[in-house]
Each structure stands twice: as C-alpha cells, then as structure tokens.
Image (cartoon, rainbow over all chains, first blue to last red; front, side, top):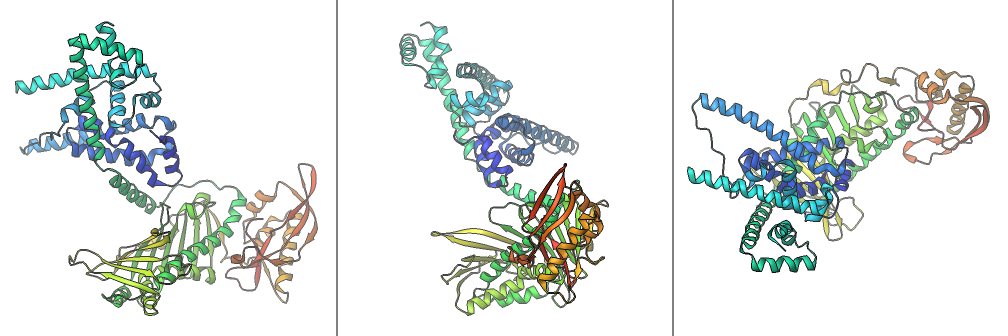
Length: 177
Length: 448
C-alpha cells in the first residue's frame, strides 16, 4: 500500500495541501462505493464523497489516531450521507406537494452490488471496501484494521455469503416486479 | 479434506494465501467435489464483480475537484476576519516582531520586485497598451498572490484615488510568511500604517514614511497597470519574447506568454498573463522558474473585483482588533533618544547605555521608551526576573549583521543576578537604529 496515511496527513498539516491528493486517490473508490449504495446514485455519491473529503481535510488536526483515518473518513461520509438524505427528503416532500415527479434513483452499471455492500454490517463492510475499493491486499487489510490475516479471510468469506444472499434477494424482487 | 474444511479456506485459496500443502489439498478436493467447485465459481464471480466495480470507481477523478474545493474554501476562510484572540505570548517573540516585521516587508518587496523585474518583458500583438489604459480607470482592486508551494496566499485590497495613486491598502500576510507572529494584517490609511499581529494580539501603529513607502511600493508593483507597462518595456528592449494568443471565443482569456531571453539569474524565466477579452483587464499572472528543461510555476497572482467598491471598514482595524490588544503607538510618543550633535555610533552607544541604566534602576517605563516605545509592563515581564547590577561594557557600535535593518549593533556586557546567581550577560547583537518616522531619534530594536 506504500506510504502510510499518517505520512500524508502530516504533510497536509504541515502546509502541503497538494499531498491530500494521495489520500483522495487512495480512498475515492471506497467512498464512492460506500455512498452510492446509501444514496442511490453515482452523482449524489460523487457530491457526497467530495464533501466528505473536503470536510476531512479541514478537520485533519482533530484526528487523534492517524492510523484510523479510514474509519474516521467513513464516519464523516455517513454524516454527509445522512445530511444529504434529509435535505433530499425535504425536497421530495415539496415535490410531492407540487405533484411533480420525484426522480427515481439512478441505476449505475452495478448499483445492485454497491447497495449490497452498503447494507453489509459495518465490520464486513469496512473489510470489503478496503479490499476491493481501497486496493488493499488481504495482508494490508489485516494491517490497516489490526486484524489477524486468518480473521480477514474468514470475515471476507462471511461477507461474500451475505453479499450473495442480498444480491439473490435483489434478483428475486426484480423478477417479482 | 472434507467440504467444511474446504469452504473454510476457500477465500485464502482465491487470495493466494495458502501454503503449498493446503493448496494441494484444496485442489484435489475440488477435483472430486462438484458442490465445492460451484461454491468456488460463485465466490470467484463475486470477487471479480467487486474488483471490476472497485476499478471502475477508482477511475472517477475526484482529485482535482476535491483539491479545487479545498483551495477555494481555504481562500474563503482566509478572507473571513479572524475574531479569535490568543493571549500574549513570550515577550521576546514580540520584540522579534519588530525585526520580522521589517524582514517580512523586505521579503514581500523582493517577491514583488522579482515579479515586476520579469514582467518588464515585451510587447505583443493585441497591444498591451489596451490593458494599461483599461487599468488606469481602476479605483478598487483585490489581489491574491500565491507563492510557490504555500497554500495560503498573500492578499491585498487596494483603493486608488482618481489620479490613480494608491489611497488605502489592506494586506493579509499568511502565517507562513511570519513564522513567529502568525497571520498578520497591515492597513495603510491616512499616512498611517497599522500592523496587527493576531496571534499575539498586538497592534503596532507606525507613522513611518519609509516602511509605508516600501509596502505601498510593493502594492503598486503588483498593480496590473505598472506590471504590464514593465512587460512592454522589456519587450521593447528585446529582453523577452512575447507570444499572444487571442482565442476566437470572446469568453476565453487572452494568453500572453513572456519568456525571458536573457541568460541571467532572473527569478522568473516565464510569465503568463491571462487577460479578459472584453475589458482588457488582467485576470491573473503566473510566474515560472526554469528548472532543468521545465518551467515550474512559482507564483500565481490573481486579480479580483475590479472596481467593486471596497467597504471602508476594510481599511480600518478599529472594529477588528480586540479591545485588550497590546498597542504600541509610535505616533503618540517620542521613542528613543535625540541624536543631537552625536555621531551615529555615539548615539547608538548612548541609547544602549541609558537602556541598561534604566534597567538597573528598574525604571521599566524609561527602558520601554528606549526600546521602540514598548509598554513598561512588557519590559518588566521580560527583564523583571533578573536584577541588573552594573554595566561592564557598552559598545563600540558597528554595522548590524542584517543590513536590511539599517541599524547598528552595540555589543554589551552587563552583570546580572538571577536566582541568587551573579553572572555576566553578553549581548552580542543589541541593535540600535533611527526611529521610524521620528527623524533624529534612535532606539533599540529587534530581539535582544
């Protein structure tokens, strides 16, 4: 995984905002996957991911444990997503009053998968996000989450089972429609 | 190996984490067990699907958008006046501000000077004269100057009078320019300059034409009309090659690229001006340094809000500075000693001698007057912890090691008692110079 998050955080705090770029690169897919599943569209996810990263940048000095950047970032993303959903709800209530069409969630090419990932229980979700969207190998995931390698693979196996299950259910409900 | 054992290590198998013996065991089990093969196929499909999705999302380029937003937001934050006040810090640092203040002015002047030296570089087809002319009608201007890798810019707000002369100015110096003081605000108005050091809650008022002239000159140098004039002259002298690109789309900016032809140590070997087609006003300037074969951008100067009237409050610190800020008003008191018939060296030694005598007498008010007009309690805070017993030697005065200070140095030795210990304190860099704005008077300055 190369240079640690902590190093880049240090650089940013030291007045090199450009180095935040590396953290954006590292975590953008994680955030997009995490947020797309929650928000129902890639556009909204992109907006929320940007907002998350900007907020994270300006809050970096509040981050006590540098090695927890990833989980901390997901926490910010969750708050941003909640805020977006709330304002979304308000807008759609107004839209309903005006009896306008409320836009349906945009389906990305693999929105089903992202939705399934977003629905995973948090420990499994972090694992899957890091492994597939954060570009980490299993041993890097084990380092990052402070989890034995055996537990990583075991939990991944469990996560696959849950994912398959929810993808299956999605398919069935599609068929019913 | 049975099916349960196989399933347990299937993920490890896909991830290539198994030891050879385990790997062989899994593979031979898979050969004979269709359900486990099916399981493997399912997991592999999911694995590939996740990997593909991850790859797809990683390709979205958020980087630049996020960085842009961060820079913009930082800019906005800088513009918001900082209303938080921190208590006064070490007095020695405050004293140092006297020197850093001028050192910083010198830095800005150098930067501005460099910018301008190079801007004096040539004349392109769309006629730079149009820009010069357009700029002459400008009364208000907001300039933002990014230097090298620093993220926080220097920022100027200027008001010109109807004759095009600088009337009022406000300058925000970011913390990186003032390692000791932190972010500093300078306001120039009615021939008076005020320097507010926020972090230390310290307000210095100067009526010093010389320092003010330097700051004003710097603001003038960044003034686009002079900048472009300089560029035209350099082109006429053949010192630079100017390339002008006028896009057919009127909404796009004219790009004026000036490249230095001189093989010298010019600070910038290339300048790029972005000029608005409709107004002919400069939108921004980028300065590049040649490093190896590459031009690397080192300075970006952006011009905003042409002729947008600036609120008069911007040119006054009255409402911003905390009421409990420590004020040094050099316009309201006589600072230092009058030179009379003494030579520069003699008066410098005399100021230092009287300063030590005041400390021996614990007359902190007098010592403060001899030290840039510092308030007595600051002097007491700094020197009150020790007793000054006697002067061992003062002088002779010599040139100051930092020429920009335009001062003299008076090496001195005094005997002091601290915590019951008597020792000699050698001051090798005690600086004395003329009081800014008070001709014929001399004061101690800078750090001791």
